[in-house]
Image (cartoon, rainbow, N blue to C red; front, side):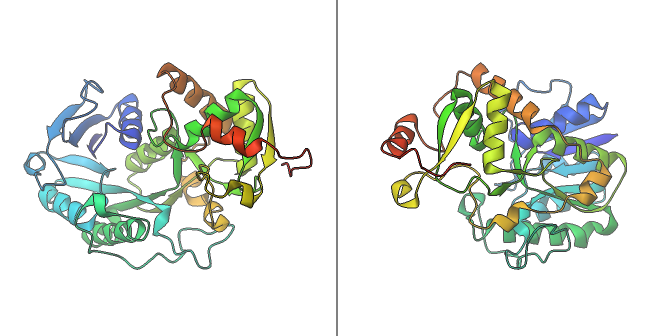
Length: 328
C-alpha cells in the first residue's frame, strides 16, 4: 500500500503516519520540511508549500491513496488535486464536525445532519475564524467528491486528544486533575463531552484506506459517553489522585478564562459514530489516553499552558466559596 500524506509531522498527521508505517505501508510525506524533520526516517519526503502554491513535487509519482490532513481551504485542496491528477486511487480528507449546522443537532445526530453553506472567499488559512472554518471545509469536501466521486472518503473529526497535542486543551485537565483537590468548574460538569484519541483516528484512516472504503464518517469519542465532570474525574483516576468538583457561580467566574471543552451548544457533543465504529474506529479507554498525555506532558517538562485557569486564578475563584457550593 502506497500512501501520500499531505502534512504528517504535526499532531494529526504524525499519528496517521505512525499508524500507516506500523502497518507496513510505504508512506510519502509532503510538507514544507521545516518541522519534524527527525521523524519517520523510513518515509519518503517531498518538499513544497500549499500556502504558496509550490506543489511541483506532487507532479510525479503515484499512490494508492492520499490522506489530506493539512487542507483547510478549497483553493489548497483544488491545487493539490490538480497537481496529482489521476495518479492517486483514493482521496481521504480529514474534515471536521464544524461543518454541521447547529440547528436541529441533538443526541444521535449522524452524517446526514445538514452541513453549513460552503465558503470559498477566505484567501489564507490565517484568516479563518469560527464563522468560516467549518464552511471552508464544506467547500473542500464538495470539491473532493466532485472530483473523485466514489473514490472520495471524508472523515469528520471531533475534538482530538493525545500525546503531542500542542493546543493543550486536554493537557490542561490532565495536569489539573493530577494535582487533585478542589477543582473550580465555571461550567456545568454534566455537560457532555466528546473527545477522541488521535491514535484511534489514525487507525480508522488506515482501515478506510486498506478497505478502499468511500463515504462520510463521524470520528468522535470516547467509546463510552462522558461529561466534563466525568472527564476530569477519569483524568484524576489515571493520575492516582482524587478531585472535588466545585461549581463556581457565573458572577464569580466573570472575566476568567474559558475552561477547555466548555461548549455553549451541548448538542454538538452528542454525535453518532455508528458508521465509523463499523468501519473500524477503535475506542481507547479515556483513562489510558489521560495516562499517556500525563506521561508526555511530564516528559516535556510541563511547560506553561496556553489555556485554562492558572493556579492563581483558580485559587482566587475558590476563595470565599461556601461549603454549600454546587458540586458534581
